[in-house]
Length: 164
Image 1 (cartoon, one colour):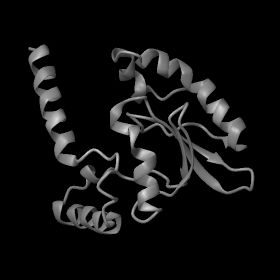
Image 2 (cartoon, rainbow, N blue to C red; image 1 turned 30 degrees about the vertical axis):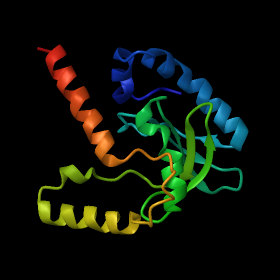
Image 3 (cartoon, rainbow, N blue to C red; image 1 turned 180 degrees about the horizontal axis):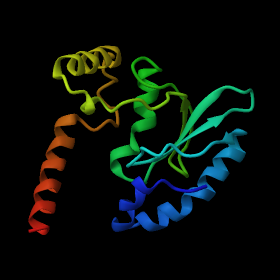
């Protein structure tokens, strides 16, 4: 399996090179565990390895393997919470490999590539409406968006300063 070039930037992140080098064996382990026939990775990915697969019963799915970082830690929980409404349905999860097996959703055009803001905003609002669910109980593990935004602001400022 050839890892897409869009993931090469992970080599500059602590642990990134080891993660990239581990991807072929992680895909093989997940394929064995879930009886998957593996296709060639989608080439447009820049954050996670995303691979079309076929399940033992012939149904199409997607295998997604995330870099072990805070940004993706709660993704399987969020997908379980949404239950396939407005997001792909989570079929399986392997915490050792940070691997998600989800229903097939073939990549299309990036929303930010739409020239006219009005239809782009309509699509985004439609997806957000479908995603809305009653919040989980107050003792959930989800990170509030305000906390994530604060962390991003601090990290962005530090990175900006570090780059001069």
